[in-house]
Amino acid sequence: MARATPEFAEGRIDIPAGWRTDTAIGRFRDFWFKVLVYGAATAAVALVVAAILGGLAFIVFALTVD
Picture (spheres, rainbow, N blue to C red):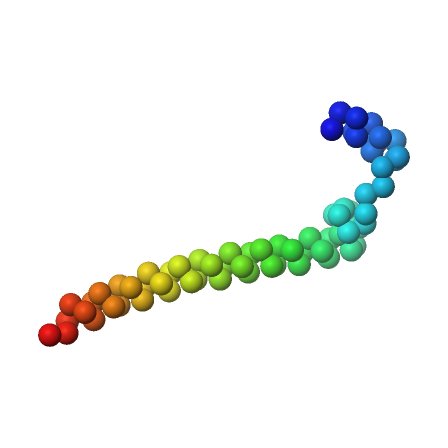
């Protein structure tokens, strides 16, 4: 990192536009990456909540059936 910092500051290292958030394509890719990650996290949480509620519903059903 200590060697890369001066090279980057002097412009000798080329960072692809898609990796930088100060370019239109970089912001576009960053936005859709966040949408994908937050969407997957939301789906995972929903799945866990549904499993817990389903388990509780089964327990209540099992306790009320003779």
